[in-house]
Length: 99
Image (cartoon, rainbow, N blue to C red; front, side):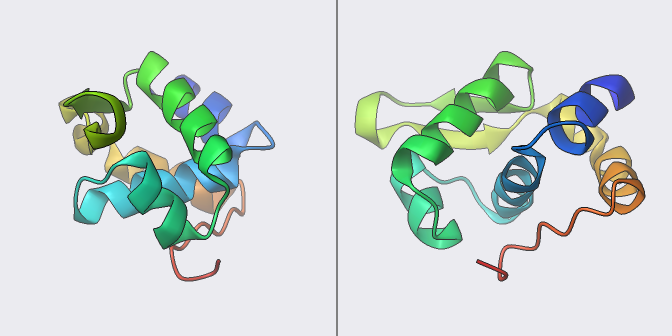
């Protein structure tokens, strides 16, 4: 999981936004539109990052279409400490209130 998170968060241009998405989903599940509004990001940008995170077993979904809600996977919840370590080491600030 450490290598995967380095690639997703620490080693890519979209890492900061992915970190912000994961941190936001720690508090409660949201759909794409809610995340877009919460993070002040373009809907398509959020959609892209969610697809990448879902493909890599960081988030999972319930529901369909516009009602689809995103949740952190159990695997991600078990590794949140590693996520924070990587964010610190990569010097990425992804707080949800910096948008």
